Length: 607
Image (cartoon, helix red, strand yellow):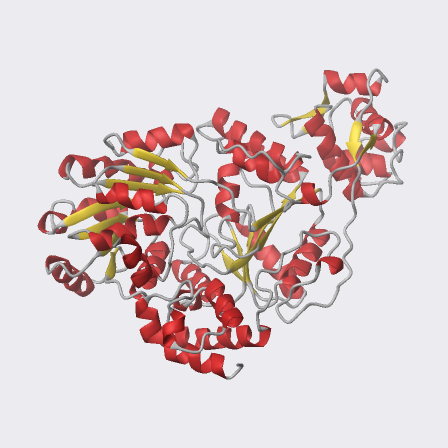
């Protein structure tokens, strides 16, 4: 019965790992905590049992956009779902209440604020099958997106002691998991920890890149994914606008999303992105939690994220359909200084500094990046992933003692009163205003590193920082201070191993119809494997056009009609009858009846 319902409503013929066990636990009315990576299928864990239980499931969700996405996706599968939040009119709420009282609504999505209002009204008058707390890390004081309204959710257990609770999140360490259980007063919950491995995501880190090199890299990425969606995360509001303008100068249109925009502007940017009217969005971390878009093909971090949790959740917005997708992280000195300042000024200074240090260690690592990520979440991997930059291009080391000595000598000769920027000016022999005003051009090491480009000095200094040869005094205008380990290098007592910097080739190359280069054409980037060898590319493009047309007619996102993965399978298998569509993953009974004839008609044109 469970599998039949899964296929009938969601179009899947089998469960992903742990989903079936979770569903059965919920059907047994046990409290449940689910940790599953973004794109791992969390929603099915509460949506499916709801269809097999009597009553209405109350889904607490932190973002209106997330509710909208989920409700549209359910309705596209023929399931009656509604949402109640601040955007509803009183007339809409009156109609919604009537539907709930009639027992017609299977899933009601509600904001935490509205939940408190309705606790003694609507919720008292309807049969509730379960409570689902989405993005449950928000409930924890240790969560990386602490939200005060979530702390009041303990009242659910007090007022509805016999209704099962399922809490779901993509990222939560051990202390956060326990806090979720305590905050929700969950009773002996079963905790399901799914694998955090997302093998379809490539992982790449680029260190010390200047602005022009970042933009060149991003442009190459966009060219590889012509017509496909991507997100660029920036640290600041100003950064999003600057990057969008730099891309516009290169002929690419990008939407902007940050908290400084009006609600209308943010909603428009998100709607344009979700409905494929724009392919690129430059955003702060305010963007994304409400995005269920399954066909995001790449994510770029223009700056270093503040924690591995944030980073993992944000890259998880790529490749939710399981198809190969790229992620790139840029990492610089300026990021470390800015994020350290934020962490030191926060209410949880020690914890936030530790999280930042772990993120920095990830960016600097010379071992398989996926192993580091999985280890952070308590999951061991006994082999390298072969889909990250470290696996593809293992670092080569050399004796960099002379380079390090030049830098440390400059730091000492300026009485350890200079910043990174000034240090590079001194080493490069640049007569900047500060260098001249403080007579740094007179010291012995002025120009000692003129033969090394500024970008490379950034990279080498990052390596030196992480090797512990100097520290940054954040409370002294970010001045650099030599450490005891640095003294040993400076005076020749130890050698300094540095990693060879590999320069990227920014020459443009031709792309395929879907913007992807072959592995031979992409020697310095992570290859995307071919997933459907016998696919008809022209048919796939035709199916994408048809999907967009059907979606526009209903004013819903294209991926809600059918996922990219389903389109690829259609273009590969080329089914000729409605009956054959039932064998295609993603075609539910409802979707076969609603869209089947249109897609069969299109496929027959290419048979």
